[in-house]
Image 1 (spheres, rainbow, N blue to C red):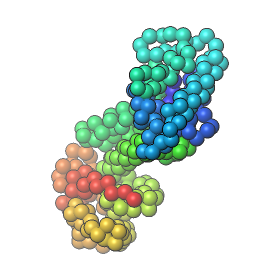
Image 2: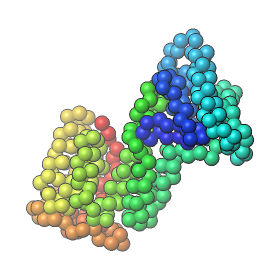
Image 3: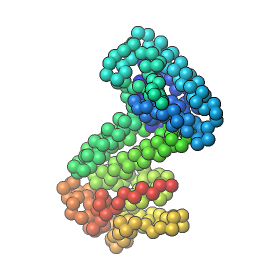
Image 4: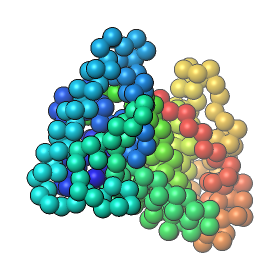
Length: 306
């Protein structure tokens, strides 16, 4: 079984889609897919579908949805002919009940040797984070870009979400944003500030109160010789934070703003230095233009999203 949730929901058995068109069975499959290989309690599925006050017929209706999913899975297995379905560590002749398993108190979706995109994303992103820690910024940028390429849109964009799926979607989107933040960080270290400007222009409008994104945009603009625009980014963020949250920007972002303010007007900063120079206090490529500000240090990752 192959599962994709980083975009529209896609679940294949033997190369055949088993995603139902009806919203409720699709919702059941989505929650099972998010917990592939693990038991999802009946109570969790009922809560996802109907909230905290389910109808009396909830469990019976859920069994009907499970039956519909098994019919789709059975049809997919039949179309696969004699191909064997791998469950766990052993190969076995697959039936729908081997794939969507009833266990005490719940159900489990058996993936076997199939591919699950959000787990692959986590594996690739983890490799990217380790490269960042090792100051291999070229490797980090490549690995994190590779992880982010698995995303094809918003997580489960075509699924009606209850409380549990909504929570999982938020978790996945936060993981995506963290990987994106670190990939941009690596690109800044490599002196790719001009290439980043179009992407960061979109991001600051999408994440209106995300300080890390705004700090990266400020730095990229200043390194591109656009000092006044960098300061305007800070001003807009501060106005938003104060008016909507009653908060001032963080001390790290304020230090970045002051450093840009004191730099020579409209003086482009040099391109990124070698990673070994990054510990000098100014960050790779920051030079004298933004003295004392480290991209990965002084500018903290503050994930305030809106």
